Length: 498
Length: 80
View (cartoon, rainbow over the protein chains, first blue to last red):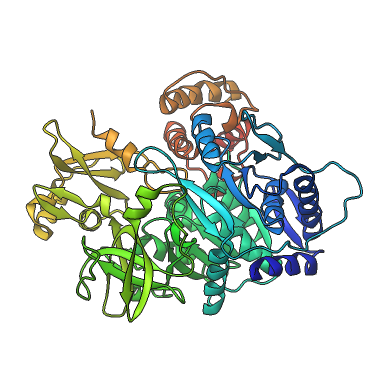
């Protein structure tokens, strides 16, 4: 597999460079190679060759990252397990895998019936980075995300999926790291943006700066930027929302690339943020985990007025090389150009299907002939449209599309007008809540000290039909975010329960 | 203002924001030691402390705070 051979080459070539900075300690590529080799030794001694999946307790240390590479060199796949998640959930995931093995660098994991793997303690282990042969459809990792049924759903990604993804990014040439880059890795290993944050630096010999799980993330990130002059940032939009009150103190001219993903990116805050990183190319990436990390992106203009936006939200741009996007209706038929519908996509990056979940696979994947090619499409559940410049706009989850009094409402539109009505830049989120009769009503959460909303309502009434005017308004000190940095709408709904 | 007085003033803020009092703040207390003290609640605690002492922290102060001792030190230097 090409990307695995390239990882080997890069780790060998850059042996003197720093590969990781984790909790105040630097590790060179040579240190890393030794850790990888120790873990390979341990796998060879302890793991029955017929098992291909290994649970990986996602700790913030060099061994955990080395385990990922060791697994790949051994033709295995990793399944990250967040040790902070409830044990029942983690047990459910591990049982679904039908593996007998877990790697835990802290050797603390205690799952009944599983063999715990750790780095070999043998002395004189020789560095060995030669990959074992793999088949292209063998798995590289499985990520479990919360499923709507309550049971976590597994998204398996093959070596070939990951290889296609890396080739698509490189084909484009917009994002090209080098051995002197210093790159931020702020994501949980259970979230696929982590893969981008470690794989591209490792392929080029750059250094990866990780963020400890229990730190105050946004301050720790700023500290890394300031102290170590990071050059490459991959962020979720919530990070800059938190840092916004301090933008005037942030000056990071070293930053070359700043990538956003995982949530709606607003043009107004990005405009202010861009002054903090004046020399950076900034991208808005979009992609479901099912299609291997990123599927499309929009490169932001230096002049924010030129950015393509809808309701103040920046476009998700055009699909990467070899990815096909179509916008469909409920019957999987393409809608008219410019019309809104569900985004479906097809590519070599697409997962072979959810892990042991036939029902879900039947619902989410379908084949269709587009431009005389018969392709397997995945329905993203994301509401989008394509503009006249062929840029795609993300409007929200289909599930977030509220139906109030029979009218379909795009919640982002309500948010846009609500924000525009107020002179100060504050974040606002519209959600649908259900009253005692089970009818949906529109609610607006405003991240601010309370203020009189009379003028705001008058403004909104001038811009939108009455069914789009929020029935309830609440002020909240800080909007709740989930561990992936996305707004936690479930938690937000409870605010309106009382 | 003495450290003791600062501790007396910030403890109720933590209790109010975190909605429990199962902790004792000392110089060496970190976010790991107190349930519910995380990214979100930290921001609110900081805002409440700024209001209480009528100060405004610099981002530099906030990023170098590793424990409650650092927080108290920073409050002290901001007051003076």
